[in-house]
Image (tube, rainbow, N blue to C red):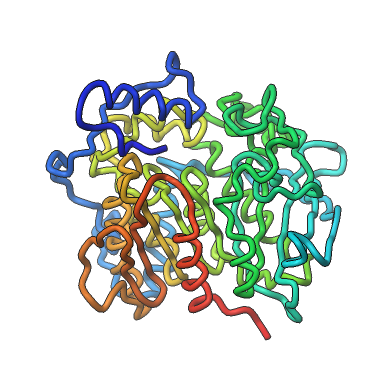
Length: 446
């Protein structure tokens, strides 16, 4: 969602808002127009919660105390107030089996190998299941590291490859080649510009992707579909998943990413200890939360994740908490809605989410025209996480902590940020930097 056009005059603002609604898949009759600000001079003064000070005022100055005291406290604050907490393990669906559906030693004109596998849950249920698409380096002789990220409209959108299975579940109607919320062959390769498959594989990585709707459809359906349909009844409340601090879609997607990562242990071509969580936009929010709750991820990449992802809420810039909660009520737990228009009262902010990734590699990226996602706020979250990384002798940069110009990057070691020229998207510009970052920081076993 790009708010770069919400400026200049009322007409441009109105037209941009219509375009945003079309891109987002929201009808104008139900979509809440936010009180948005894209003027840096109108950002309110704010004070971020101290990332290295506990709720009782205890100062944290060692990595050991961070891990034992402050990190669990911050995780609990995010669960209670924003992302929600997943159901008890006894209620969660269990992986029944992982079955290989198809393999090809030569795919995409012979440049890479392809594999598709299916994660089956609870043997008594035919649905839901998760279909996972994997592209692998053609000549790899040992397990390789991998980027793992969801796609928005089905695996077939990643490449125009006739052998990729079409999802048989609900997909957003705004997708190319979608009829009555079902994908057709015309949707194949419709999002290929966002996936640099050949570059990823040429540089020694696998690309692993799955359709997020296989885990939970991205629609406000009362949490009746996807894996929610497999949840055992809640003995305590029997209530819907959206009550209070129960998980919603982003937390469900994050759980699904972890489940896929764990299932990669059954794929000998991939080093399951070297899997980087990747996501764009709402799925960038998901990648960050997945990396926070699952330290099995070797690193995290957030691309244009904005409000509820990398951007600081207290800046009240671009998309705000009230707008995201009204337009996407299924993304966050209900308690987060209590902070609509009250960002300054949140006990957390997104620099604390970034800090939860420490000391693992973290890359946050923005686009210069994507003001709706607040590029500066995304950068400031990375900067705000620096004190935690410094506990592990990791620093952000050797040239200062100033915001960069479009086309520039900043960072070293396990932290990096870039500002890509352009709009809300994922491009080759982004992927080349992500691959370089991963090659420096994520090493597969020999």
